[in-house]
Image (tube, rainbow, N blue to C red):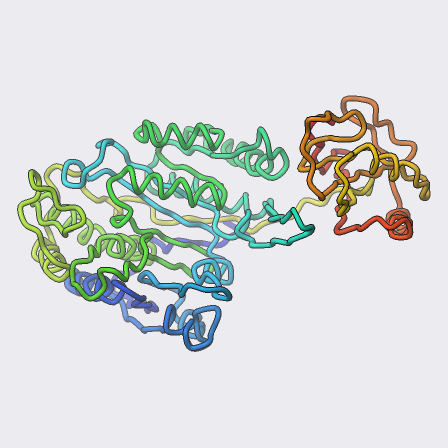
Length: 504
């Protein structure tokens, strides 16, 4: 495809080609499960060359607030593929999330978490579940843009972009196509967040039309999450934004039997990172009882990504066969199901003994039968006409009677701008608010052109010059109003690009 980039390696990539990967042994149980995982991959014939990089707790404690050294950034740049064990972020202020730093700095826009039931060998109430959660990984509330604006109020900005939506939704459908999945479900909350989640949903519906062979549907995130927890067998591939995906993927892993069994892939244009989704479990570090399955499953995703799908299947099938034979680590051991409780190294050895075998009851891994290629078009921005039609001015005011601030702002005559309404925490309180509405010290005051028709259900706005906004802010300051932020109001191609207040 012209003007596109390939994310997953070609299926016909020669398995004789050695792929270099950067490995992070992690903290807590990380070194133990990484040692077991690498031992299994070597025995299975994975054609990889590893370079160890230092990230995590000791880097943090050395004074590096990001948890990663320049040498490790260089290792990532050289290798492009990362296999990462869990790390520990020290308690206290000033330490940034390394996972978020890596995902955003490296453009790892897609987080992929497959979870399948392993019933009865791993306890679950849903023996038929087989779900892949595909989560947008870079934006949404995880942009981490927060401000304290008044004594009462802090804000967090939810950023959703069209290129971000297009990449993740396209990836979900391409993944479904590559791995013979039948349905993609979009999870949003656009009944409330009509612009941000509305954009995600709009892009989903646009792209779904290009894949008529794949069933598509949408769910509101709250009832959708409940349905996942109640009947996960009804879902196949789920695509959603960052925060929702973070929550859903843990729900899916937990009801599947164990968060400790799941691995994930973080996919970008140039770099990919693979990791277990569980933490570093320092309480059991060094006891040799940790279950390496999460990191091992991440490693099989990595092998599939770099084109070594046959090796990935070989490892996955040996792992499934080991579970079927009842050889289990302590975290999933069941008296009536398991035949032997083993430690980390013994579990790895048991998997190695079964390389070449396939499970008799659990589904056989068939990654090598997928198409193996996922291609995403480069984003092409569509130009639109953008017109300024007003401004939301946020004011810190300690009074509690909206009528007082409303009348004060209405009396200000500034360059053909008028006060349209005031909201507090998104609820209209002036004019004609309800006395029962609780108000904080954070007031959103909407100003529009005097000529705007604001009495209709869908207001008709008129163009505003930016100099009018500047003059208004100066006038507000002269009248002792504490302006803490502004948001310009725009129409794009004649369509409103801002939300209405509740009750407006």
